[in-house]
Length: 131
Length: 464
Image (tube, rainbow over all chains, first blue to last red; front, side, top):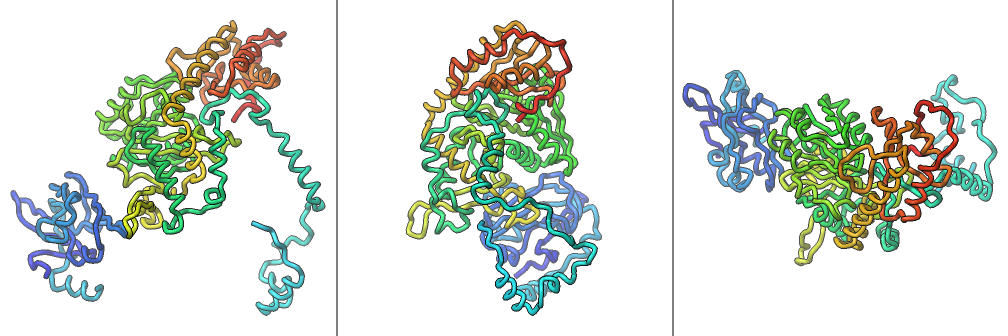
């Protein structure tokens, strides 16, 4: 169910790493499992382009009808793009979390942060133990 | 809460229940050297009649505005309170009710909160209001914190010196623990100069905090200052006088992003300093950073109109340490009074009240300055308050003289503004009569055999 080409964080964010213009870019979102746990989303706060993010630190927040939860960055670097109208179409997240539900793109400055992330199989094991 | 003491039988049965033989045994864990080994040094108990007489004697030491003619303003005002406010607000359903967590049993209170918010939005020209905060000072501080949060600029705030000194003190207290810089812009000429604001605002500034009409009663150039703030990416937080909005443009029309006020003027008498009412409203885009309760309108499962607390994910019982503010209490009873007052006065009544304040204050300005030693400190247009300068520099004597003649003539300003040591702030509400204003003018202009001028001393009896 979870795409094989992504890396996953314990806190249920995913990252797709690609090369763009010689830079290593990480596209970040949250997983289908996280969305199911959060229930109906009503609001989202994302950072501005140029913001420095750190692996394991909050970069934004999602608000459901029950609670507000932090979004933790899976990578360290600088935000190069933000899916700014995502907050106006939160239903996109549930229907297509791994493509059109992307949140931010980060120019990764520190590769070591990637080593702490999980592959699909490991992540799905974690979900099974949490679910 | 009733005080019901324990009889010796009660004590014996409680000790028995926990298996302890005596009170001494119960407290055996308290070290000997920490124990008070003698009776408390208290006078003999009073009978009910003696107690009532004692408290009446203490209460009689207070002076109240029923005994003196009040020209004191500076944030709390002697406005008329229509009888309907007390008649409705003192109903047990409102007077004794608790926070409306359960909408199914709290529809009356939630509807009041919703109507209060609606009236505040109409009054201020803002999009959303909370269900109130503690008072005008804490509302101003929360307005600044909101601006720091939504702009992502937590390091610097610009405040006009003409904002109420108590409100600026509250900000200083908040800022002492959050490490932000508070830049104060001079109001030495009675209001702040937009150019001075422009010089102080930069790309790190979260907001400009302005009061209009300001602490001296003078009008500020709110529109120009709002543009300066916005051009720098900062917000404008405006503290306003609710009664002034019967005549003046609304904060929302002037470009304010957050409007805050002391709401005591709206249906609550002077109560020796409080409890009062904090009004706070803002533009819709900032609603998720607005502190305090918000009541919202919805429909129940049968489709009927009803009210609930809404957007509670902002609040500390859900968001814990990331809540917009620790404030979760509102002044429900005073918000109710404000709602009744505004509904009763209506736009026309509020306009007439504001016009009366304006005209009477301007009559008082003329009468008071006809005395040779008294003059206006500032030239700016004013609403219901103005600053008088005593050319003899003996403000405390002058005010004491007025107090002994039955007039609370004004607030000495030297305690907050050393350069205004020879000035005092006079307020004239719609409740002051021509005879009272003439009486004050006579007292203040009376020639007295005077001792040699002496340095200014603060006058405790008229400080507030």
